[in-house]
Length: 190
Image (cartoon, rainbow, N blue to C red; front, side, top):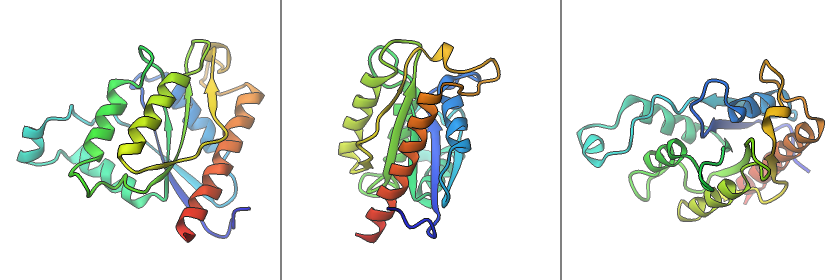
């Protein structure tokens, strides 16, 4: 059981740039469903440029610096990913690649995280989430294993304003957030 007297600060970001993205909407739903003792800030990945070592050598872009600072300040991460061609979107991988630099000094190292995703398909981003978990291994991140949240058939699960209306998935996000809170506190105490 989590000690809710400890505030867990979570940074969330979606692997989609689309304004009306279901994954951005899922993050907003998570903000509505936070357990006591948890806060969630949402970060927009759109300003982060494509990773290029020449650009990095000339000076890390401000958007990347801000992203890394926000990761470092957070106790945990919440990533909402769509599924593109059976995997994670390029924008998400690009942001993670920037945040992983320089090797051995990344704010991602040891960071607890929860992963969820929404897609219009039947599997609800399951394959993308599993690929993201593989990326987490090399970064030495600590993902929550259960529950898993795969919002399938997303077009029918959100209303015209982008609100998640499906009770089963709202409950799944609530449980995922609670698990992230407990996991983060456990890792902090280890």
